[in-house]
Amino acid sequence: MATPRVLALTTGLLYVVGGCAVALIGAGLGQRQTVRALVVAVAAVAIVIGLALLGWGESLPRWCFHTLVATGTVLITVMVATAPTAQAEVAFAAIYVFIAVDAFFFFAWPQAVLQLGLMLIAQTVVVSVHGRGGPGVALALALLWTSVGGVVGAIVRVASSARVDSLTGLANRRGWDDELRSALDLAHRRQVPLSVALIDVDHFKRVNDQLGHAAGDDLLRGLAEDWSAALPSDSRLARRGGDEFALLLPGRNGPQALVVVERMRAAGRTQAVSCGVAEHQRTETGGDLLRRTDAALYTAKAAGRGRTVLSGQEHDSLVRDLAVALERQEIEVVFQPILALGGTEAVGVEALARWERPQHGLVSPAEFIPAAESAGLIGALGASVLRKACAGALLLQRSWGQDLLLTVNASGRELTEPGYGQGVLDTLRQTGWPAHRLVVEVTESLVDGSTERALETLAQLREHQIAVAIDDFGMGYSAFSRLDTLPADYLKLDRSFIAPITTSRRRLAMLRALLELSHNLGLMVIAEGVETPEQAQLLADLGCPLVQGYLYGRPLPPALCALPSPRRAADTGAGNPPPGQGRSRTPPADRLSAVSEA
Image 1: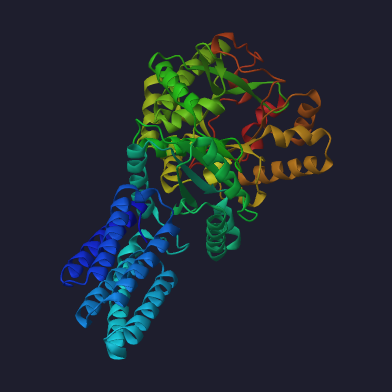
Image 2: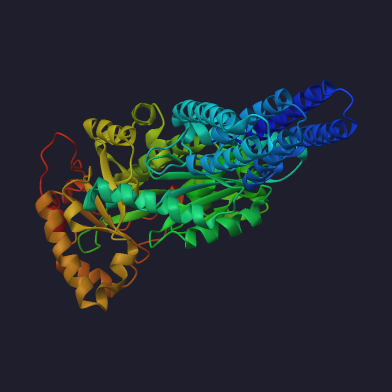
């Protein structure tokens, strides 16, 4: 019911105040030397325990406080049993109120009731059997402490409900953030390690959509139970909202935390989850720590989900170098051609970012794009790539003598950044690239889990005749039934979907059905990863409108790109604008009829 710091401070103060109260009561016992010596000893023990809790209690596991409350009951019972007068007996018994307050303030109802029951049994036996007050006094005191404890417990639970997730019973975002602040303070003062993990349930939206929200709630409750049982007692698991969980692991460095999180993931039923882990660095704030953890989580999801990624110092170095590269305009753009039916005519290019990191060589986009997102550099990176892509595509158009389609990738973080859509429009105006010849590529998983802001951004782009392509379709959990709900104009088939078409009759049948369905829905299909003549011929026979892959050309800087075909756009119809929001969704075969005849 409280953070370790509050638990230690409150219990420590109650011990100190209780010890002082025992000492004051003992001072009025006159010349009873034996009793006074016992009183002094009990008071000293209580005060020492209290001071120790105030100084070091935060690092104690929660079960120790149950022992300390029970120890307090024993010490008070000893005083009541040895009280030489009825007045002293009642005075010592009054200190039991601290036990009731402490138990119901911090412990769950079953544990608090157990502590209260032990205290009432001890009090009743001592007061009614060995004491001078008799059963009436014992019953009155029992009623008093029960009332006090119940009222305190009810008030605390009403107050703490704002910090507890009603679905899982775990701490919510507010409660966990409070615990994080306390843990960071302790880590600074004690110079002890601290690690944090963020956990996302993979494809949770699909569970809600296909099985219903009740099934999604059951899944979250079950995962919370499984994980809580598998975690160490000093960890703090919370549900921060939706399908996102957070884990606080005090006293553990990054590698140790990674082991704990992997053990927790294995205990989580059959549902796959992605996790990011980061160890707190001395100079960083809680916000910095969470940003690094979130970046590690995003890397885990980008790498295929169902895994755990530990943030490290290499990530920080990568971010610093990337910031310098962006400032110096060192991120380059290369182009891979997109060809029309049959692979005979280039109708467009895909722009791809490339970064040659000093002393490290070429860095994969799968590595530096998540780093840019975690460090808040994704906006600058995306703007730089789009600007260079438009300038390079204009150069190709002049060199090739024909209109081209330009496709550029966008990440989920870009789509959720305020002003992204307007920034794209501004870049088009500044560079002179026509909006109707730009296609923004987003992954299927991004659309599947997009926030409302991301979907609004896609709608804004389409309203301005900028087309949207679903990239990597066919990888993972793609479903034909979702094609009519995707906010897109183009469908890019992933290379993993295309690779088996020459060896798998089932995959070939799926491709034929997908092309026919896409045609009827007005979606233009681009087959990625075409690497062999056999694949190209099959795609041509099936009527796949557009193709792309190493068979036709590897990504090259615009100055090195060669014209795959001398035919002009005016002769082929390649310059026709792509479909967009609010415009006629002409079937792909009709749009490229001139190309298919060539």
